[in-house]
Image 1 (cartoon, helix red, strand yellow):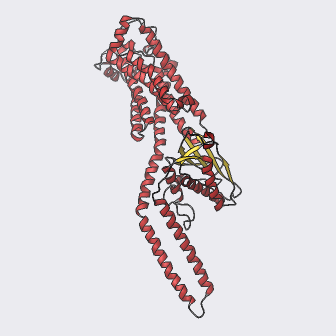
Image 2 (image 1 turned 90 degrees about the vertical axis):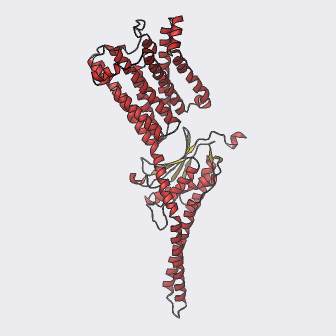
Image 3 (image 1 turned 180 degrees about the vertical axis):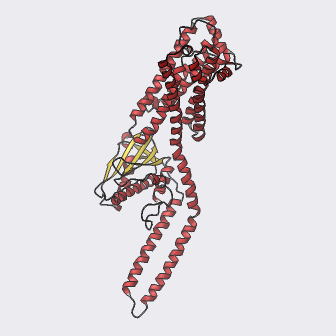
Length: 505
């Protein structure tokens, strides 16, 4: 079973690092690699010790043949002890670093480098102490160090596991937004499952391997409990903890990788689709020009009709109005396409969130003065933004939200503009009381030229335009259906910890 779990963790960690090449993925891959190294070292040690029950042998190695293959690997006890030394003392270190990276506690965020350096000290000092030549030299001088080192190393390992799990759970319950909590929950389950799996075997001290034939450690923890014939209940617990911990770790690792990869994959797909749209833009504009020229011909015909002695004025007037509406629509389409495709320079400066949303709300009120708007924004929050540009994105979301209300017959329900400061993000949320968004449409609504509205006046560039603006602010755009009905759009911006002008003055 450990073979399968080790292989699954190794494959999952490599996959995670391959698809998400950032610090978090590197730490997650390192964590899985450390655990895999340690578990393989433990299997080598157990196979060489022998004396395990048939049930434990089948659980660990599947068969006696595989166990013997491990048993007769040409490794010295110093080499095997060094293998266990690296895996045993690196896993809690990486786990702590991951927990510290994800924690938003103020004392950790204020001095992350100092906290990280202090975190490094016990694992590094312990790993150096357990280097075979260093260990042999020191215990020859002071034999009592063997027992002291065991309890000290085992103590800080348990402390690191407990602190890391506490930080992860504290952070999980500190998150208020659903999709942040959902994503972080997968990471928590993965890390805690791996920690439980590591905890089962972490009592093995490298010194016990170096002194394989010594009786000094008989009273100490290690893997001695595996050498005894466990009762049925104990064996079931052992198997269950290993299987549940390892399986949950692997599944949550893959699900977390998939969940974090999906937005990037969708963005890449949208970029490819918009490249096609950009390539066809000139053809599209050329078609508009031809239509305008055709309309000009129609105008000439109308003028000719007016030149007759008895023209049909009603028919002519109706045609004129229809052509005028068509021309207005075509001009609006040309301007929106030009605005969306044209490269714009964005000047990011600290802007109060309240001012940004007020600008968007003013534009929204001018277009829909009858639309009720409710705002709930945190005070004293700054975002790095081009105010005019980002306000346009918020205004577009407000407009879409009100039109969704109207389409659902909820003209009495307000559009809601809400601000959040959540973990590493400042979030602008726009809620509507419409019919929500069908699951099959969630990935399509940000595509260029996709629209579920009347295509004579809405031709599907609005949300892509919003997404382009948000991306230019180093942010991302998400959509979720609300439990009570309607949809919510979220603009996720990197958190800026500067103070507002009023606080500085």
